[in-house]
Image (cartoon, rainbow, N blue to C red; front, top):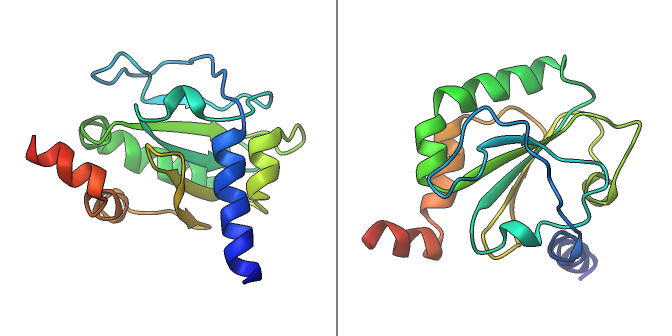
Amino acid sequence: MRAGLKKFTRIGAVTVLGLTAVSAVTSVNASGEATFRPLPAEARDLKELRWEARPVLLFAPSGDSSDYARQMELFRQAEAALRERDIVVLSDLDPKNPGPIRQTFSPGGFKLVLVGKDGGVKLEKDAVLQPEELFAVIDRMPMRQREMSE
């Protein structure tokens, strides 16, 4: 019961927090959104992206983190597949200035969080994730199944 409540609280927190992300653009997906951008500390939620994108939140102690660098390298190599799945990668590299979203997930170091288009948390990992593993999770989602059949 307690674990279920914790998960529900996290899902609610992600849905209710506020994202006002300003882009440091390295690429743009089909809808004109930046594929890679910072997650500002003042961001309170992800509602701007709800029903439009699948945010992948990356938390790391700094941009020099080896796990963060490796994850970004893998994502950049798979950028076309990220765009195809409407994935927006948001990075928070400043644990000394924790915003509401970082506080929700309390990463102790490197952490990856997949948020669905519906605003729910779909996956949390404390290690580098191969893009294919991420895509497999997304491609099993009912909304993604509908997207692929259209």
